[in-house]
Length: 176
Image (tube, rainbow, N blue to C red; front, side, top):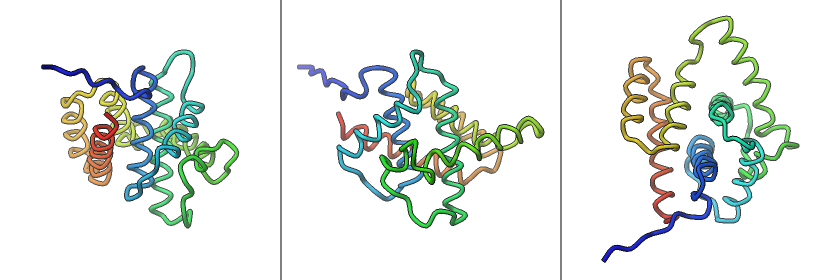
């Protein structure tokens, strides 16, 4: 006998699935060894939606969100913030040391890309392929991303990709 397992409420729409994937990406990149309760997850998803949700879900907004998370990860590795608050606090638009603080860094990244074609293309490759993966869940997307990141010697981003996919797969399967 077959049994149908409904997707969690957040995953029933494409927009919900992409916001949930953004949550997993954020947790895997910024809070890799921490788990959060369902309330924190729900509050954070609402805030992610405010940053990303438009009448039409646009790939560019998700890619910007992911790249800004990578810039925050880079700042953490350089030791800039001493500690990170919970995701629902970090995502608040008025919290100046959280997601809002990455806007200037992201604008500088875009200007640098205008001057130097291919600058930090490894970021773009990682986030665009993760977006495609979260949209369609295809293994070939991950294989392509892995091959390109290896060619670029972006081993740190490759480990982030593995961590993110593990986080997405593990916690996604727990929700079902």
